[in-house]
Image (cartoon, rainbow, N blue to C red; front, top):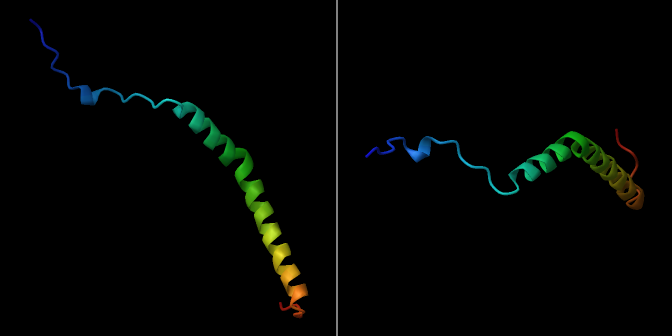
Length: 62
């Protein structure tokens, strides 16, 4: 009788269901969408501050 003496903990772990799709989705977001979204948020926040300045009738300050 031969017994398997190798520990199953040393085997390569299995991937989770949908793990490759999640990795592709994250890669797409990081490569294509992250910088344009951050730039749009920055521009929108600057425009909101200018609208608030105009609404509050504050002079521009450098």
